Length: 248
Ligand code: UDP
Image (cartoon, rainbow, N blue to C red):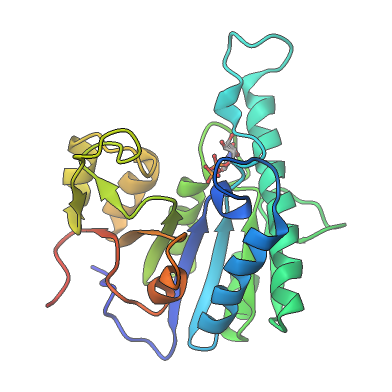
């Protein structure tokens, strides 16, 4: 069983940033100021932590926007379009990080050598050991899942201590906090609790995969000042989803 407290030479995390992080509240597309704010926090935290970032794409396109009933575009095609959206975000974040002096590598699960390296586990591992921030684009490379599942998959492959899921709410709530002001924030949930309560912050496939291999997930609000750095540093903010509660 992995725990978030495990102390290796350097902490290694997989950070999932949803498409919301690449734009401003209520907007779509790319807003470079929002990306630079993320990059500044990531750059500071990267001194002490090995960081692999799984990039979302919902600010541009999600495959589920195109259902079987949509005319002209097949659902699988739409999912591939969503994966390409994550690469667009990844390129923007890469430039923002490099503008701050960080060394980065963008790796993609769909080969596109003109813009990024193909994802090869051992190579990603090596980049992390060398202190490079690894940006993971194109999700898992397969349609009909989301980048949450990619985050779970890459965290397991790269033997990260935790999946950090950056969202626009404070963690996992009993109900949608943007609609129900009485929704209660959980500080800890077992994987089973999360799945049985049908909670909606992460996709079930990702949580099931983490449950199977004991990979902890921390969900937190990246829009609160300093939270991204705090999560990267291992502070207990937001909600932890794991097999057992954290040590006091
Ligand atoms: N996607 C996919 N396979 C993957 C990852 C992503 O098909 O392994 C597609 C899917 O359509 C998804 C879109 O890419 O909706 C953008 O990713 P996601 O919805 O996870 O972005 P986020 O919600 O994090 O912004």
